[in-house]
Image 1 (cartoon, rainbow, N blue to C red):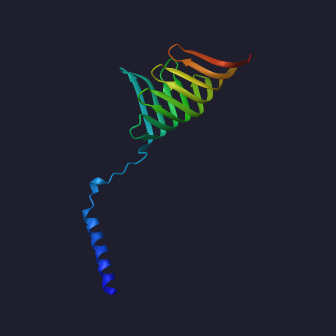
Image 2 (image 1 turned 45 degrees about the horizontal axis):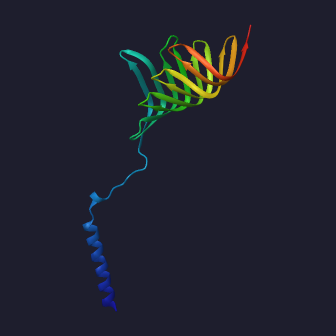
Image 3 (image 1 turned 135 degrees about the vertical axis):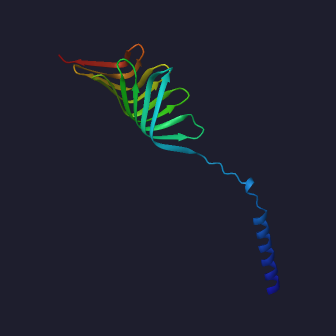
Length: 171
């Protein structure tokens, strides 16, 4: 009985050693589901020729591998126009190929002494258009305009609130 057990144990041990020695690491592949890189402090400058059109800065950025998007947090966008437009938001997704930035989380846009607020906003860098479908609030020293939806063409300096526009003017 001991001889059979010893023979069986020796056979299993020999097969185990052969399996380990015969294993080829080149055949083993691991496909991660989601590769990312992240960084503290992101700064992107968009130029046309030698002229800076806009700059994006963010406290944190996540760059998924193989993706053409950058996920940013605590972002600032400075659009060089006359006048200069300063935009801040909680988080967003920058599409590298299209040059678009979708912003979420209390978006504030400052133009001189005027302020515009909404919950989300899309900046189309190529078309130079700001747009949203959310409620908007536009304030200045002597007025308050509220509504829903917005389309602003930066080149033309034209802004249009799309629906339910209500205005209050202070004298």
